[in-house]
Image: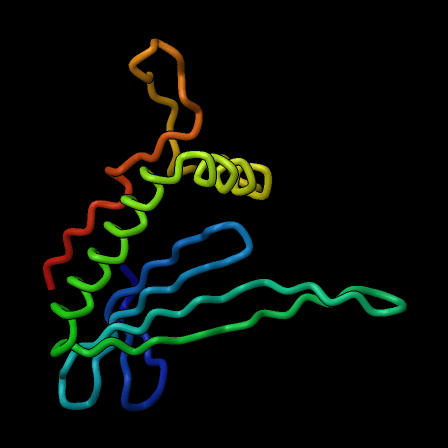
Length: 141
């Protein structure tokens, strides 16, 4: 990784990860404050195009979350619980889940996907099966 980058005088970025997801980009930045404490900044950047009479302009809408070390375990547990709820809901609402996947697949622009083709009990393929391994939440802070 690159050398430490200074975001502000008091915050130094010690690790950074970029996750591209369609029109959204997520930035996970581990920062260090002046006293040496680490914290996580999660930034969502969403591309918005505005149409003007003469041309279109691209703007980016950004949202940030600051997550401090004392909250990591609570966040990890809550995040895992929320993903578990979504997986359970998807399993109990297969028709709605299929519609969501179809909409997602029609909107995505890149080839990377969290969905995989699997075989069902009847020997047919199910193009909309959820790949649980993509959402295994194991965070060791």
